[in-house]
Image (tube, rainbow, N blue to C red; front, side, top):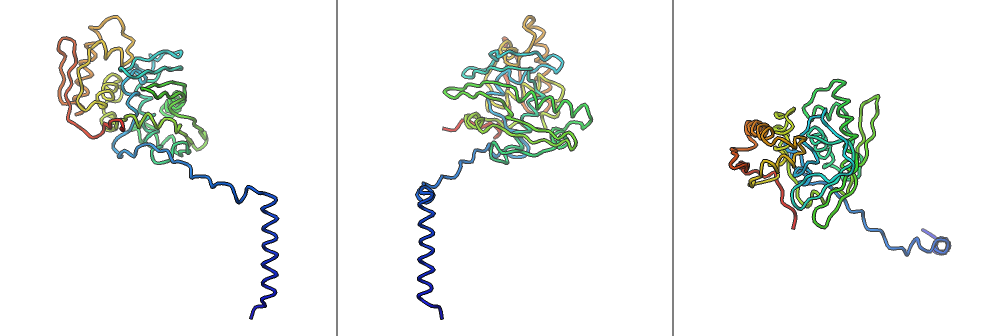
Length: 288
């Protein structure tokens, strides 16, 4: 049987030691417990689509120019639909960069934003449906660098200043990447995002104007008519002189878009482009 006197003595010593600890660090027991950190995450869209915030698709941020025609943009105002203001500094982005960006967001959606996403260059290229040769690896790396260039996007009262990819680290030996996406991008998605059907975009590879139109019209459940000149400006076309030449390219691109099933029909009437499509669930309205 235990000795009550010995237990009382041990208890007294324990209380005395506790008292000394509290006196030495008075805030250790009285401080308010910190609330758990809020987890910020992208929407969990389904596997066949690649989510992007609508301002990036309703503008010339990801232009319809070919890679060899890129230019340097010095914090210029980028053409965008009404209500969206975008400034960008760096080497011009195009539809190839859009697909890489969307693939990174697709990977990041499974993790809290700001956490490191682990992937391989080979895995990214395969997910994009691209070849995996040395040239493809170089192009992928260059695209990831471009996506770290500074930009500013303003939609209503909200303004984001930063980059699309916060940072990336590459191991040249294993060709693996550690990539982070800025948590402050989340409000852009919450204000409205669109899921691009990846398989349709693969069918349009190498056709920058058709790819840009694919992204634009994906953001509209029921597209309203755009003027040919407006589409020319919004896609970032370098053709600012001949609207006739652009109109011819636009007709070809719309045919290519229709061939994928992204749009049902289209017509140009009095320089207004009318597009009709089958309703989908990939376009998300802003949260209220």
